[in-house]
Length: 118
Image (cartoon, rainbow, N blue to C red; front, side, top):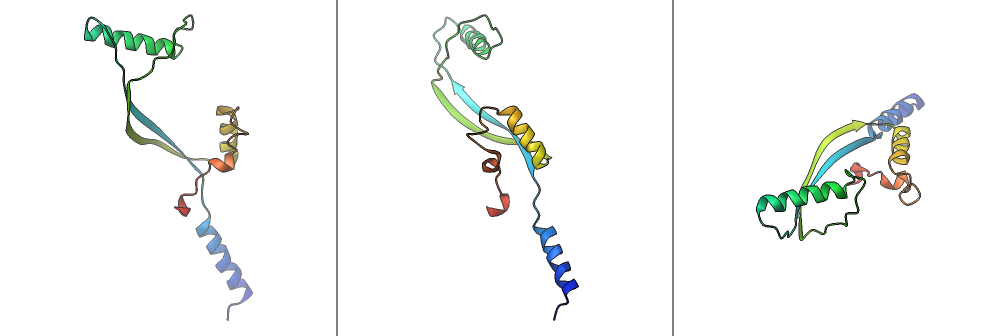
Protein backbone atom coordinates (compact mmCIF):
# COMPACT_ATOMS: atom_id res chain seq x y z
CA UNK A 1 0.00 0.00 0.00
CA UNK A 2 1.34 3.46 -0.93
CA UNK A 3 1.73 6.12 1.69
CA UNK A 4 0.41 9.66 1.09
CA UNK A 5 3.98 10.93 0.58
CA UNK A 6 4.71 8.27 -2.07
CA UNK A 7 1.42 9.01 -3.86
CA UNK A 8 2.24 12.72 -3.91
CA UNK A 9 5.79 12.06 -5.19
CA UNK A 10 4.39 9.73 -7.86
CA UNK A 11 1.89 12.38 -9.02
CA UNK A 12 4.64 15.04 -9.10
CA UNK A 13 6.82 12.82 -11.30
CA UNK A 14 3.94 12.23 -13.72
CA UNK A 15 3.19 15.96 -13.92
CA UNK A 16 6.82 16.76 -14.68
CA UNK A 17 6.97 14.09 -17.38
CA UNK A 18 3.79 15.26 -19.10
CA UNK A 19 4.51 18.99 -18.95
CA UNK A 20 4.95 20.35 -22.45
CA UNK A 21 6.97 23.35 -23.50
CA UNK A 22 6.06 25.91 -26.12
CA UNK A 23 8.32 26.31 -29.16
CA UNK A 24 8.19 28.74 -32.05
CA UNK A 25 9.24 26.92 -35.22
CA UNK A 26 10.13 29.20 -38.13
CA UNK A 27 10.05 27.76 -41.64
CA UNK A 28 10.76 28.93 -45.16
CA UNK A 29 8.23 27.89 -47.78
CA UNK A 30 9.42 27.72 -51.35
CA UNK A 31 7.28 28.08 -54.45
CA UNK A 32 8.26 28.13 -58.07
CA UNK A 33 6.13 30.64 -59.96
CA UNK A 34 6.08 30.73 -63.74
CA UNK A 35 5.04 33.77 -65.76
CA UNK A 36 4.36 34.05 -69.50
CA UNK A 37 6.21 37.15 -70.69
CA UNK A 38 6.31 38.42 -74.25
CA UNK A 39 9.67 40.13 -74.86
CA UNK A 40 12.44 40.44 -77.48
CA UNK A 41 15.00 38.45 -75.44
CA UNK A 42 15.14 36.16 -72.41
CA UNK A 43 17.12 38.85 -70.56
CA UNK A 44 14.42 41.45 -71.30
CA UNK A 45 11.74 39.08 -69.95
CA UNK A 46 13.74 38.29 -66.80
CA UNK A 47 14.51 41.97 -66.17
CA UNK A 48 10.88 42.96 -66.66
CA UNK A 49 9.69 40.31 -64.15
CA UNK A 50 12.33 41.32 -61.56
CA UNK A 51 11.47 45.03 -61.83
CA UNK A 52 7.72 44.41 -61.84
CA UNK A 53 7.85 42.12 -58.80
CA UNK A 54 10.09 44.56 -56.91
CA UNK A 55 7.63 47.38 -57.66
CA UNK A 56 4.71 45.18 -56.53
CA UNK A 57 6.44 44.54 -53.20
CA UNK A 58 6.65 48.26 -52.50
CA UNK A 59 10.35 48.83 -53.17
CA UNK A 60 9.26 51.83 -55.23
CA UNK A 61 6.35 53.53 -53.41
CA UNK A 62 5.67 55.96 -56.29
CA UNK A 63 4.19 53.39 -58.63
CA UNK A 64 0.83 52.23 -59.81
CA UNK A 65 1.81 48.68 -60.69
CA UNK A 66 -1.01 46.22 -61.08
CA UNK A 67 -0.58 42.73 -59.64
CA UNK A 68 1.00 40.23 -61.98
CA UNK A 69 -0.71 36.83 -62.18
CA UNK A 70 1.46 33.77 -62.34
CA UNK A 71 0.90 31.29 -65.12
CA UNK A 72 1.80 28.24 -63.05
CA UNK A 73 2.72 27.61 -59.43
CA UNK A 74 4.54 24.67 -57.88
CA UNK A 75 5.17 24.17 -54.18
CA UNK A 76 8.78 23.10 -53.64
CA UNK A 77 8.53 22.34 -49.95
CA UNK A 78 9.14 23.75 -46.53
CA UNK A 79 12.31 23.81 -44.44
CA UNK A 80 12.66 24.42 -40.70
CA UNK A 81 15.13 27.27 -40.20
CA UNK A 82 14.87 27.98 -36.47
CA UNK A 83 13.29 26.53 -33.34
CA UNK A 84 13.06 28.68 -30.21
CA UNK A 85 11.65 27.84 -26.80
CA UNK A 86 9.28 30.67 -25.78
CA UNK A 87 6.82 31.35 -22.99
CA UNK A 88 3.09 31.74 -23.51
CA UNK A 89 3.44 35.41 -22.51
CA UNK A 90 6.07 35.97 -25.23
CA UNK A 91 3.89 34.15 -27.76
CA UNK A 92 0.90 36.35 -26.90
CA UNK A 93 2.98 39.52 -27.23
CA UNK A 94 4.39 38.37 -30.60
CA UNK A 95 0.97 37.27 -31.87
CA UNK A 96 -0.64 40.63 -31.16
CA UNK A 97 2.37 42.58 -32.47
CA UNK A 98 2.67 40.64 -35.76
CA UNK A 99 -1.04 40.04 -36.35
CA UNK A 100 -3.02 42.90 -34.79
CA UNK A 101 -5.95 42.41 -37.17
CA UNK A 102 -6.04 38.64 -36.75
CA UNK A 103 -6.35 38.54 -32.96
CA UNK A 104 -10.14 38.09 -33.04
CA UNK A 105 -10.05 35.89 -36.14
CA UNK A 106 -7.30 33.52 -34.91
CA UNK A 107 -6.95 33.69 -31.12
CA UNK A 108 -3.65 32.34 -29.86
CA UNK A 109 -5.01 29.17 -28.20
CA UNK A 110 -6.39 28.05 -31.58
CA UNK A 111 -2.94 28.56 -33.12
CA UNK A 112 -1.13 26.23 -30.71
CA UNK A 113 -0.62 22.74 -32.12
CA UNK A 114 -0.09 19.91 -29.64
CA UNK A 115 2.56 17.62 -31.15
CA UNK A 116 1.81 14.90 -28.60
CA UNK A 117 -1.75 14.44 -29.84
CA UNK A 118 -0.48 13.54 -33.28
